[in-house]
Amino acid sequence: MKKIYLPLFIISITTTITFADTLELYKNCAGCHGENGEKQALNKSKLIGGQETNLTIKELKAYKNGELNQYGLGNIMKLQVGILSQSDIEELAEYISKLDVNASKKKH
Image (tube, rainbow, N blue to C red):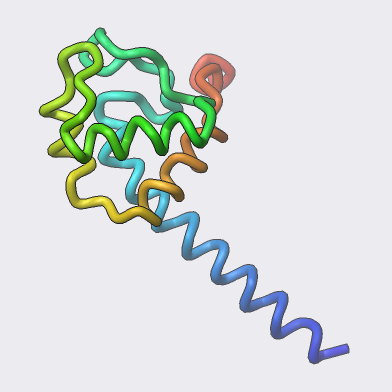
């Protein structure tokens, strides 16, 4: 029985570390988009919380490559996502897809 606990512990720690890293990545986004993706960045963008993962990946890659300028925020977004790796983008998109734009309202 003890042999089962070690792999589960390792998986748990790895998941926690990955989540912590992704949360750290999202902190750069939260300044404009809000803690739960509930804000329009600079009162211009759509809400990103709960957005479909593949759409977020597509948009982040396009911003990174300078191919997208939604709401006139292309240059800002290019700077924000310019240092992200492909795996960073994928993890961030997955994280964003799980955000609840109504979470802040529920706290009050």
